[in-house]
Length: 443
Image (tube, rainbow, N blue to C red; front, side, top):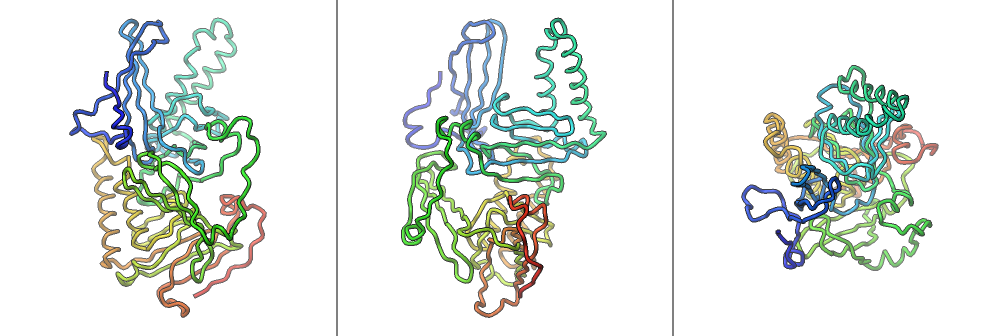
C-alpha cells in the first residue's frame, strides 16, 4: 500500500500533474468494504490536477470476491468565490461531443423535458453531453425491473420518459442543457476557442445561504446574511490581510486587500494572494463603487509596443474583443484584473492555449491544436507590435478602465462610448428595472 508521506504534505502539494515520465507516482491503495457483498475489496486513489477543474481525486474500487467495481471523481480544489451557470443550446450532433466537467454540487436541467438532476445525487464526472444523457438514462433504468412488478404504471411512464431522453441524442430538435454549480467548479467546453461560443452562455452568481450550507461553508444554524463592511477609512489607509488557501496547490496562504483610487477613474478593491509553497501569485479586482447607469465600451487602436505598458482595469463583467482575430472573451473568464495591456494579453494566451484542458491527450484533433497554437502566435505578434489590431473592453456595468497616456488631453488612439444597456444585459447584472440614460459618445 502506498502512503502519502508527511513530507509530501508539508513540503509541497500532494496533487501532481499526470505524467508518463513520473513512474514513482502511483495511486494510493486502501482496503475497504464492498457494499455489494460486504467482503473486503481494494480502493485506489489518485490525487491529480486538471486545469479549470483544479485538484481532483480519482477513485476506483474493485472487489475480487463478487467482481463489483465502481469509479468516481471528486473535486479537491477550493470552492470558487461565485457560482457558475452554463446554458448550452444543443443544435447539432457535434454539440453532443462537447466535454463537460460536472461537479457533484451541480444541478443539471433540460427545460424542454422539465427534467432536473438535483445536486449531490450524482458523483462528479468528466464526460461529454452525450455521456451525461447516457448516465441519466442509466439512473432511470436502474430499478425498472422492480417497478414493472410493483408499480407497472410508474414504470411505463418512466419508459416513455427514457425514450424522450434517448431521442435527444438524434438532435432532431434543438434543446437546452443547463448546468448550475454553486461551487463554481464545473466547466463546459468551447470547441470554437478562441472564438466566442454563440451557443453557450456563462453567468456567475452569488450563492444563497442555503447553497452555502449545502457546500459546508456555512453552519446549518447560521441563517443571517453576512453584514457588509463599512469602515472605508481603514481600507483606504491600511492593507488588510486575511488567511486563505492557494488556488494552485491549496497550501495555506495570505491575501492582501486594499482600496485604491485609480487616477481619472474611481476607487477599486485590489486583492493579491502570494503562496510561499509554490510561488503562485494572483491579483483580483472588485469595483469599489456601484454599477454605473450606462455601459462603457473602450476601443484602443494598438499602434506601438509602448501601448503594452498602459494600465488596465478589467472588471468581472467586462467582455474583451479583438476583432481582427475574431476573438471574444466572455465576462466570466479571467475574473477582475488590474494589470497592464501586456499582462492581459498574456493571461488570454495562457487561458486559451497553455491552460486549456481540452487540447491535451491523444484524442485531440490536430486541426484544433494547430488553430489554438496559431492564435497564440498572433497574440505574441500583437504584444511585440508586429500586428495592427484593435482591443475592445465592453463592460455593461461601466466599471472597466484603460489608461489614457495623453491625460488630461484626449487620446487619439482610444475612444470611449457610453451606451444604454439592453434588457438582457440588465438581467445578467441583476439590474432589471433600472433606469438608464440615453446614448452618448465621448472621445
